[in-house]
Image (cartoon, rainbow, N blue to C red; front, side, top):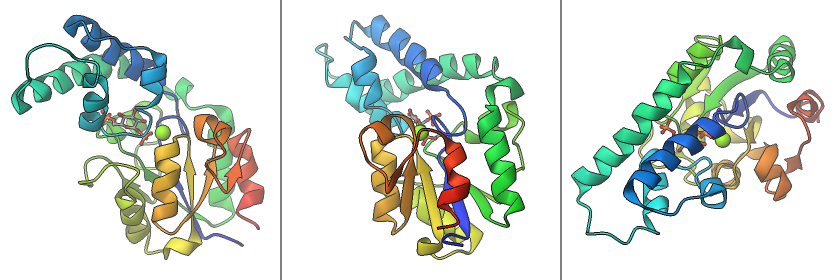
Amino acid sequence: MEFDAVIFDLDGVICSTDEYHYKAWKAMADGMGIPFDRTINNRLRGVSRMASLEIILEKYEGPALSDGDKQRLAEQKNDLYRESLHEMSTADLPAEVKETLDALRAMGLKLAIGSSSKNTPFILGQIGLGGWFDAVSDGNNITRSKPDPEVFVKAAEMLGMPADRCLVVEDAVSGAEAGHRGGMKVACVGDAAKNGAGDWNMESVRELTDIVKG
Ligand code: B16
Ligand code: MG
């Protein structure tokens, strides 16, 4: 086997929360009169909540905002986002993802989450994967956002695996960079795959079962 562990990004890999993030940021930006569209939204993929806000504020032209103002704007977005997460259920875990996770576990691999999101435990619960992974490293246990490798390095530590035995799965270019900076190989889907950011750029997560074999 080429790898002993797989570390999965959450949003955009295990499930799709993109649209919920977009709508919540859009409502906040509209309220502030800040231009915001899907092109800017694309830059928020894999980026932490406060770093996402800073990207959106690049187009803000009003009076200076204090740290407290920024905190409140981020909270406003997160409250809207959390509301929409209540709509998620096990139906939001795609069959190809669940079947691939089960197949990888049956092959004896350790499986972890490496996500920038502080909402990771809640989302995993909603889609029926609460307590399922061998380790969960997320926005609650890191101080530096992707492309910093911290979230993946911590996931590997939790699993007790050296970096070169771990494969990272990502949909964000920033996340692929984080995996590489952590000394890991990266398999990409979605936006990151389109950008050729991975060592493997996949059409479907189903390809992982062959990739891990080498
Ligand atoms: P939260 P991932 C990331 O999750 C999202 O891609 C990104 O859009 C979001 O800003 C970030 O989580 C923080 O999320 O506000 O819930 O803490 O792709 O790293 O699983
Ligand atoms: Mg992602």
